[in-house]
Picture (spheres, helix red, strand yellow):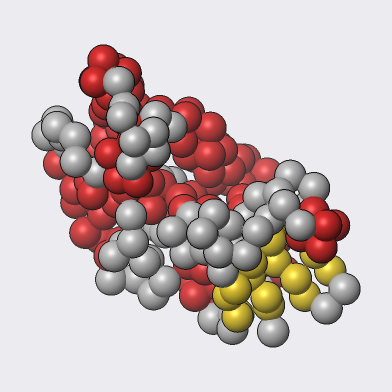
Length: 203
């Protein structure tokens, strides 16, 4: 049984939970992070010196970094539909996984915590507007890509890349900012909504 350490409000924890659901892997999730068990304790830091979630534990094996965990689990289960073995095909999946974890995640770093979680409690309206515009511009990149492709991050089939992108698109839609018309993104979220483990009811 996999132990998954991390609170469900973390998009990175939800990546791992969704991956486990796609793979049919049972897991037990434990609440760690702000508002729950502290990640600053010596015991947790021995698992992940970065004091961040998620962390998975399998017997004496410990792994952190959400994309690495998802790649490991898919490869371990031999799910080449989710993560191809062929280098070029795999790179197409990993490119969008890494884009989600870097460019897309960075675009909402100020506006999402401010509007959805009240952090900081008195946000700067100028920074809110600038950050929302940046987030929308980054989402427009995903819009153009989805509109030109087969409905998923890599053509016409669901892969690991769609897990992080789908959760991010859902977060964008649920955050109270002005949203431009991105029909391909809207259709994408609806397409993913019925998949096991999508967890789209959490922002």
